[in-house]
Structures are given as C-alpha cells and as structure tokens.
Amino acid sequence: MFHGAAREVTGSCHVVRWKGKTILLDMGLFQGRRAEVRDKNTVLPVAVDTIDAVILSHAHIDHAGRLPLLARHGYRGPIFTTHATRDLCQVMLADSAHIQEKDAEFLARRNRSHQEPLYDHTDVEASVRCMRGVAYATATEILPGLTLELLDAGHILGSASVVIEWRDDHTKRRLAFSGDVGRSGLAIIRDPVIPTDVDGVIMESTYGNRDHSSVDGARERLAAVVNETAARGGKILIPAFAVGRTQELIYTLHELVQAGKIPKIPVIIDSPLATAATRVFSGNANLFDSTEPFVREFRSDPGGVLENELVEYTESIEASKAAMRRPGPMIVIAASGMVESGRILHHLLHGASDTRNTILIVGFQAEHTLGRRIVERQPRITVYGEAVDLRAQVEVLNGYSAHADRAGLAAWHASVRATSPRLKHTWLVHGERSAQDEMAAAFSAKGISVSCPSPGDRAVV
Image (cartoon, rainbow, N blue to C red; front, side):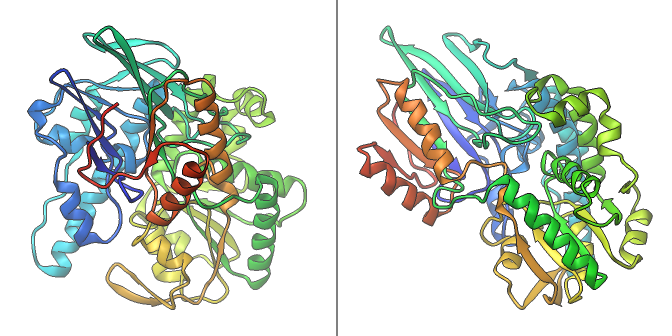
C-alpha cells in the first residue's frame, strides 16, 4: 500500500505485506501548509503493533522524520538502514524534535492555544536505538524467508536503494525501492548502484520532467551571484540541507576564492545541525568517492577543507542573531532546505525585503512550502506569521541538486530493465503530479508498464 509521497514529494512511506508480516519502506515527514501536513503527519499508515520491521532509505526528514512518532506510539521493532544513515539520524531527528518543540511554543504564544509537538527527544532516542546498521551490498535476512539488500543510491551520505527478496510457491520475487536516486559525478558521494534482477520497482520521480544544468555551469553561476550581490553590499541567503549540500557549497566557495573568482567574504554556517553533520561525514570517509580530488583532500584533512579562514560556524542563538545584525557582503547558509523551519526563517524575516540581498535556492522546493513560494517570486511571503515583501533577488541553481534529473532517472531505469527480464511493473512515487505524468508518459511510450499510485492504492508484485 502506498501511504506517503504518493502523487506528492514529501512523507515517503510505503507498506509491504507478505505472509502476514508488515514492513514499512521509510517513514518520512510531510512538509507544506502547516494545517494540512499536521493532520497528515499524525495519521500512522498502519497500527504500530502490526509492524514487523522498517527499512529506511536515507536520513532526509521527508524519509525519516516520522520514525520517532512510531516510537512515541510504542514501536520498538527493528529499523534497518546503513550505518551512516543511523549516524546522521541521531543528529537530524534530534534537530527535528527541537524544531517541533520550538514551533509548538511559538504557536502557543501566538494563538494562545496548546499544540503538542509530534514527538520529543525521548522519542528520537528510542527510535535511534531501534536502528540496525546494514552494510551495502550484503544480503541480510530481516524476517524468516525475507532478505534485504541495500545499494548505494548516490544521493547523500549513507543513502540506499532497497531490494527485498522472498519466495512464493518456490518462485523468487524481488522488489526494488529506489529511495532518492542521486546524480553521477557529484563530489564526495559515489555514483548510484543499480538494482538487478527485480520483478517490480517503486521509483522516485522528483525531477521526472526536468533536466539539471551541469555542475560546472552551476559553479560559474554561483560565482556570478556572489560577485553581483557583493558589489551591492548585500547578503547571499542560502537555504540548504545540512547534509551534503552544505558541505559541497563550502568546498565550492573555497575553490572559487582560491581561484580568485569571488572575493574573500565571510561564509556563515548558521546551523548547528550542519556542524554536527560535518562530524558525521568525517567519521564515514570510507564511503566517499575516492576518484574525486575533494575526497583525497578531505580524508587527509577534513577540518582544513570545511573549516577554512572564511567559514564561521554559529552554535548559539546569540551568535546567529549577531550574524543577522552584521552588514554585508556575506554568505549565509542555513537550514532548512525547503525553508519550512530553522534559522533561515530569521534571516528571511530580516533580509527578504532588502533589494541588495539575494536568496539563492540550490535544491528542490516542494509544493506549498515557503521555498516554493520564493522560487515563484511571490511579491509577499509570510515568515513566522508576519508579511514580508520579497524584494531581494531570487536565483535558482538546479545544478547543485543531489537528485537525478529526467535523463538520469531514465538512464537508471533503463539499467534496471537491462538486468531484470522479469520486471513487470514500475510505480512512480515521490514526485509532483506534473513530473510523474510526464515521466509516466515517456515510459509508456517505450512500452514500460507504469503507474502513479495515489495514497491508499494497493499493488501486487
């Protein structure tokens, strides 16, 4: 059964039932309009006491963000994932709990009503204790007769495509869940590994109707944005995921400064989560793409790469507020990636109306998120309940996306088909309707059996 990220991007969760057993693929947080996602996030896909196992593809909150809610409702069964994803979840889920607690406090002050956060730090700790690290490309029996294999998805540190295998009437069956498919050629992260010999595929479709600009092109445009904004004396405000994107941007900015392509201006990392995530990166350097020059430099001196003389990491609220008061030019990188929470909101509250500033979007923005409204360049946005005129420049760099684009997704699926003579059907998830419909039409034109399930739809492998 398809529960989340069905005909939409966030809330990844799919329910697999086999011989009376129930397995969840992901348990992600829905993101978007506050009232709508609050109701969706509180509804569990199945009763907790019926869940036998959870498999987690990666640590991004739209895939992992409701795991503590399961724990809050009493789940203490296994959560299978990679070792690096478990490490990242320790810091990312704790950050999510903190944000929800602060958000509940804010709403209570503003609306004079009490709203409980979805979960707290105790629930996070309980969910992390349930996580069992699984090595890449290693068949692991997770239930009697059901094996799991995790393959590097090339998306973020520890991300995985999932393959589960079982036998029905002595016939082997294999189901692949893509997770989020990464891009080939990214710094740090290895290229995606393709699932093979499968009967069905649950596949993401985030960029199913769009192509990215090249990474080199994005680097040049980043330099241009920095130069143009610095010349105005403004700030470049970058909402960025704390895992992967932030580290890549720091290194790219360092490269550009060393090459003399941008001026030496402060780079403020206003995200305790990004700081903690960087430590996790340092502890999992064995997973990096060893063909990249970045990786060789990172392995030899992680601190020197990500903590150069231009970069300032803020930990306290006081340091964050001090950064907001400082005049430009400067670059501010802060979570969250879809501009739904975190310290980036405070920077936008104070900086979105300043024509000298630039808001630089470097990742996908789901429908109904503040990030999408900024991408759409709506003349007025709402931040913490206050109307703010959007006078800052808005730039979008899709070249930094960690998702495969239309061509990359088509190539990934073609590789799966080439090694899977029994492949019967593909279900597209984790995409907006327009992206899914166009991708499904392109697949159908090639004779591929494909569908785009809605929430509650069921399928048979």
